[in-house]
Length: 304
Image 1 (cartoon, rainbow, N blue to C red):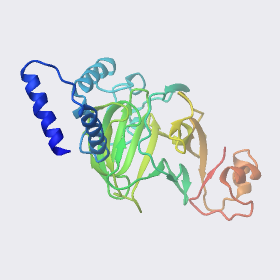
Image 2 (spheres, one colour):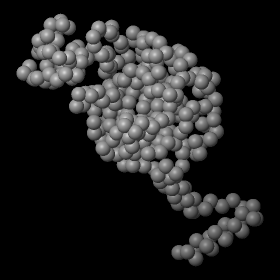
Image 3 (cartoon, rainbow, N blue to C red):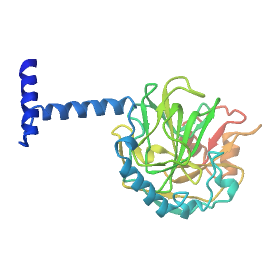
Image 4 (cartoon, helix red, strand yellow):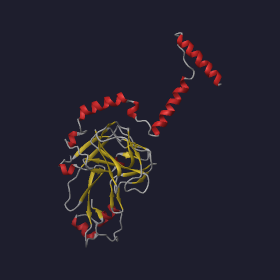
């Protein structure tokens, strides 16, 4: 078989020298091998899309810079582009719109993995994102197109993490990484590799901590993404705000704010319900607790 291939190759070279075109029978095999090698390299993070399509990436970067300037979604964030804090917007006085429609149709699931921890309260602490299972070294991809705003490390928090601002107005955070594949200021297309998954920071096992934020406020990623089917619920996500309630902390889910009260000494479900003009049954339903539950000082109770 090797002799036959060698004879065919030599014969094809001679015909080529004589100017006679030859369709090599091994072309399909070569193409298939090339595709397999390329897919293997991408899966092992040896090659980046920017290496595979330099011209396309350069064109995209120029267009993005022309359309959005230095900071994407500047109509929302103004000229605030800070690479020191995850949420610099409250300090900068950026105002929250009553409603805002976010186009999420052009998306990518950051990593295909099982949901291991959901958004919401966890041991009396707010878990502001979702955790997706991965293996150390797995590729983490940009959920939407945009620009890298912040790269940092937190020993007792995110570990190595990336913050991106997207052209649709959202920001996303990718935590517990092992390696960065981008740097601050990079313009990234949807689905581009931005990091490798890891187990750094406050983490008990390899996973991706993934947050979605709007003007610094955390949203429930489940309201945009369906992590069971790795799709989105709708091409458009509508953010809606609500008035602030005195004496409470404000959180956001599905673009809708809700108020949380921190339990103080002497508080009971009855006193909290009376103070915020709600019922004990409603408090129990919202917090999934029993009416006989003893409250702890510092415990957060959702009131609406």
